[in-house]
Length: 395
Ligand SMILES: *Cc1c(COP(=O)(O)O)cnc(C)c1O
Image 1: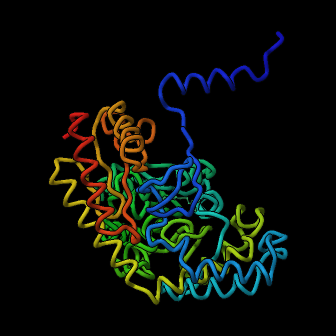
Image 2: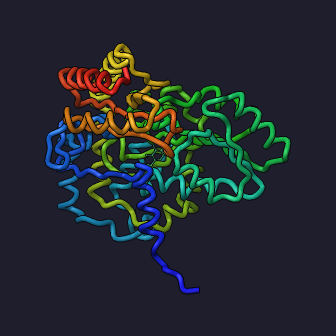
């Protein structure tokens, strides 16, 4: 048989287009912040993960420039060979101190943390237990293990306890329980104190991926600090790319964990280290987050104000407990139209979230709050949501 080796590329893409599931990618022509320029247009951006506005903070930008002049653009090697700089050491110490743990490791990305670390923590004789709504990078990390897999209903600690018992009864050598800290589609948070308690009685390892919690919860220190669970959560995975506004992944925890990860995580061992200017920016971002608490406070003030007003308009914000505020409209076409009209008519940039990211009947747009939003921006967005929401008969 003579095959057409690449026909599937076009066919599968066109299939996505037919289903309205292809990504329409817009291009930023400014920093990622509320007042942004997108595809040549000034917009109000309500979908950046740069929660605190640190991506364009003068101290963070200056640190990047200074380090570029001193060290140049690229790292030149993977971290363990010759890609660790004095800056990397300074970052890791400062970050551990900020988080209130013994040690930390700067990894390539949050995605890479899950890819590299999860498969080293568990093997064939072990069990991994995962929340059903965990991030795709956790799911992929779990796919790389040979451990047996159990999934519990979203944030259901009773379900988790059943899985812990099942793994224990089966004679698991190790049990790893893994959850997002903040769930990125719903903005709800993991019931961490109860998860830790359930795990303690079985000696299960607790891994929290706090990519959307860092910079946001616990005065910026993340969900573990928020619940005062340092030393009880064994592994914290995180990202410097969201609340801290820069780029990179982090692992935080005990000295034992960091030495283990440094020597075993394959994404850490085999992928080039951060450009030094980026590391310098990460240091500056942590310094700003520690010394300028006003950004975190403004983020939460904005979150509370906006959420209250859109709820009063009749929008369903689900179980949002964070600056991630889903506006759940149900029908996927309506969610896409809401985002489209907000962009076209009101110059407001939001993200439609439809199947397969969420169940079809839970289609939504996702709005994210930001410390750089001013009250007049929020009022403008609320008015626009009222106008378009009524027009589309959502509210
Ligand atoms: C964004 C995110 C990641 C990926 O982090 P990056 O640093 O962007 O690679 C991993 N896990 C969760 C829960 C996330 O929200």
